[in-house]
Length: 245
Image (tube, one colour):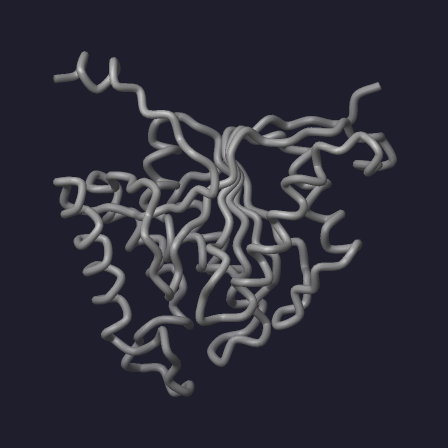
């Protein structure tokens, strides 16, 4: 007896609204532009953020999702600042994976400036593995879910850098990435805002986002790029490269 299934190609898990856009907004836009179904899953509402409120962040996240043309955006409502690796939270992520059955999952890299990003990485990794175990039972609207484990788990870069396993060319979608980021009006530089300045609200921060995209784009001989890490080896299709040359 099969549970309720809505197949997606990709699921992106992030700790807070705006993390996905900052880290891999260009890649998300590239995928949706090529008719792949992408879902964004925010673990928290970002209610501890210095600027804005949980309500404004939700509105901004919705607007950014429209810009990126994703198939869905959901919030698992885990408390901000308290992303615990416990049974309840693991089950929330497992249920989401089994419901949407993506081929690829993206999550924050395991080491970062923000502890929530580290916790989110560890939580998603556990759920990624456990979602394939038959003896872990979950239900979607009282209907049993079938075990399912995606093919790949990739990690995106946030504040701290790593040596990327691969870099995605986002030259054609970089402007969409920046447009999606601009939807978060409360979070980033706004000279009219009277709220306290934060690490990401300084005008230099958005310059850094552009410069980093240029840096990784240069490494693959493209204008803009986004870096990713894989703990497992990735096959290289030499024949496909040669056929394109």
